[in-house]
Length: 424
Ligand SMILES: [Mn+2]
Image (cartoon, rainbow, N blue to C red; front, side, top):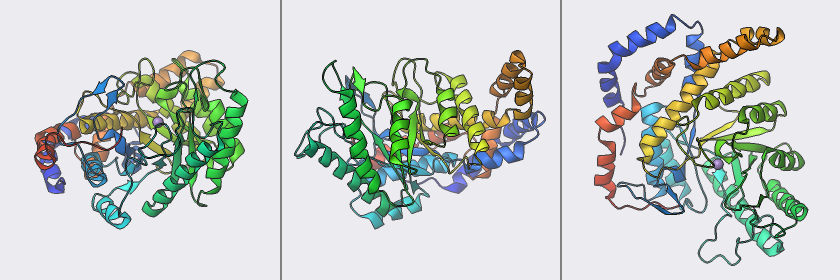
């Protein structure tokens, strides 16, 4: 299904008086609103194909009606999000959960929904039916060269699918590691992984990037072979200029200073991709900004500052994506909330008075520096984000419009109450 642009405009119309009043109030406090709105309109956050089905835990999964059963339906779901907020203009595919059977047809559906193809993701963290060799003891790190070869070939196949669809990056997240002390040699695991990644790197087209994602623990619980940003940066540095580190907010040990990590990776020119989610305890994959909104803002503050320092384009020079799963919410509602939270944090970061902050730092005026950041964070930027959405043709209030139009009910009618999603 598709949302008619006129429907959005009509519902916006009824909200306009209140919106204009709130927007005018905010405008009286900020002087660079137009520049911020332009940046907000340009900013696009990739939606992973696996976030559109029911999320779950290792204890089980609760299904919901109208789940997308095919890749086409997943693209249509992202199209619905994008129609509502105009900031969800791409989908990130996971192979082999979403192998495109007919590239031309898939590209056609994507074009109709104004959706582009973001980074493609390989999967060597589970065995597929009929797969000759098992990844039980790792893939790219495996002591058996034949297993490594199988995993390398899978990654190369993922690149080929991505090339057909117009993707420009491969994300490699490895579950490789060990569960118990003594199980593997850290050095051999690292060297095997590096050798495997080098072979994948050589298969990258000239204008592609590879993102090496790290994760502190899980599913391996003693060591992870790409366990932190230092290890990822080692791989990315040794591989070459097309290789970058990917930061997933949930993949750190508790209380890690992620904003500092981001700042240094950008400083080294080695931050390539970013996965948004939020967490309280571990890799909880909760809605972005739902637990630690101040942290999200501080991270964005470093992202904006670091990208500006290198003259990077905020919208296109990093791969932005949500990586979360939804066990108890309608995934589309959850994704609308995540995008909204990300846009708010981005807008707040754009509000930071950088000149005053630099002055406070030069004077070692600690209290002033803190005030400057908190002033930006405590500004209610929702009218600014809504205005950017409205100008781009989206909804002033995406979530309530989604409910008002009864989109989930319509999807259930079309696809059935027990449609099943491919994937996790
Ligand atoms: Mn991730």
